[in-house]
Amino acid sequence: MRILTKFNPQDIKALQSVVTDNQEKAFLRSRIIRNVNGALSANSREEFWLTMVMCLLSTQQRSGPTSPISRFLFEQPFRLSLKACWLQSNVKEFARRELEAYGGIRFSPKIADQMKTNLAFLEQGGWDSLEQFAKDLIQQRKSSPVPDHYLLEREAARHIQKHYNGFGPKQSRNFWQSLGLTRYEFVLDSRILKWLRSNDFPMPLSSMALGEEEYYCFVSDILREWCVQSAILPCVFDAAVFSSFDNEDWPEEAPVW
Image (tube, rainbow, N blue to C red; front, side, top):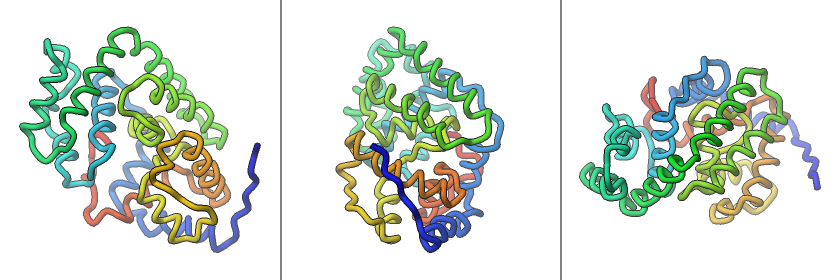
């Protein structure tokens, strides 16, 4: 079933305005460079791993510009790098110790266990399929944006959900978006829902229900059509909304987001 949605001029103005109002924010400028018109990075296995750890860390805790999570991820050298984890006989205990020693990071034992499970899957052949999706997305990213690009983006997100511990609809999309490889799939969280409610979204919205893939896609499909009719790329829109809720701006060269 396909739901056809028509947005009125006030709706389109509201969506365009949130982008205009936040266009000078470093986070939004970085998103445009990373996902729309900038050069693609090499996407090394180290970068895949860093992004995966970022997603696990930011699932249920504050991850703004000066949060413990962001400072932990910006630290050089990254203490939970792929190389560092490879050298450990017990990845779970190593990750737990490092997270707890840093301080201010919740759910350290749970995240450490997810890291161990995901690294084991990668080493048992998971790298091949992950890198193939990356190659396909890179080819798509090199072309001009077309709304149907969401199909491959969604397939790649569902692959992450299916095979990696700790990844639901939101973080599976955050993974590929943070690598600069997607433009049409949304990273939906409470900030997007607040914005939608404040702009009279005509359907009930539930943060809990976003954990279900079908509901997540239902909201995403409507919002994507809103963006298309407003001539705004979804990845630009959600970066603008995220920026509008941050009291502090992000570093110009944020290495993850």
